[in-house]
Image 1: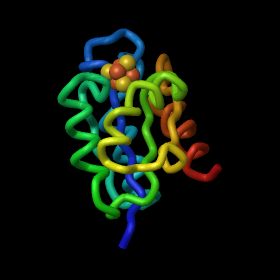
Image 2: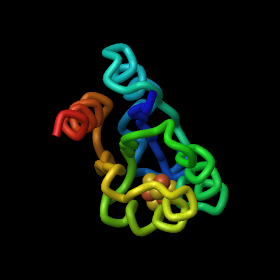
Image 3: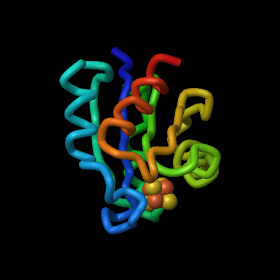
Amino acid sequence: MAKKGLLMCVCQGNCPSFQQMNIFEVGNAIRREKLVDYIAIHPQLCATDGDKFLTTLLQGDSTEQLYVAACDPTMQVKMYRDAMEAAGFSKENIHGVDIRNMSTEQAVEAIKKMLSA
Ligand code: SF4
């Protein structure tokens, strides 16, 4: 069955934009409520290995909708374009939210808002 997934990306974990939140607790809050089928944290989705990760994850039809909590959503689509094309995954099925400079609670709320849109 096609699934909904949430990826969180944190600029290698050392960028000041992600220091105000506990990214693990953000993921825990979403998974406790079973709002998606799977959750993963990637250190740097826009790096070459991030491309490979996305292509591997999205090929086939197991993921129906992919949600990404990271940096600017417009930039995300541009940065992930090659990986999505390689996987044959439509950009209509990827949804992004910017969680930079948010607290844990703010990031959770922003993700929930994206998931319910
Ligand atoms: S995708 Fe965005 S959040 Fe992730 S490493 Fe690249 S710039 Fe940082």
